[in-house]
Image (cartoon, rainbow, N blue to C red):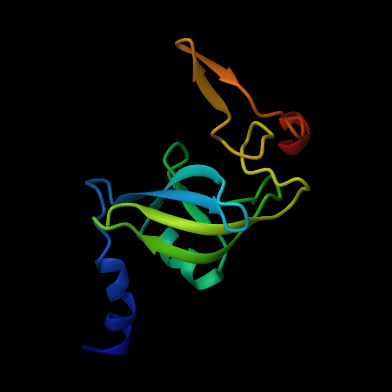
Length: 136
């Protein structure tokens, strides 16, 4: 086996779905907060490992999405983990671009800002920055 095939072997160990995607969770390294969920294809995961920066696959746009390319809210990746079934990726990240850190396109710290109470969803985390001022 040559070095190039050996280098890509770790990607072959991921259980990609029928669309060639794997779910990816971004977790804040310092706090353990779950920031967001997205999808990665093989190229996105490879780029993330190479660059040390989160790269996802946008299903709606059908292309690679470099987190922060429009918002400036880049995720520096410290560690990439694979779950026991090899079908979910966990990125331990530091969220860049705003203080306090914003990972969600709604201008919140985390995409998981709604809590179920009395059979209704309630937004419990504040908007830190108006999304209209983030995305022009």
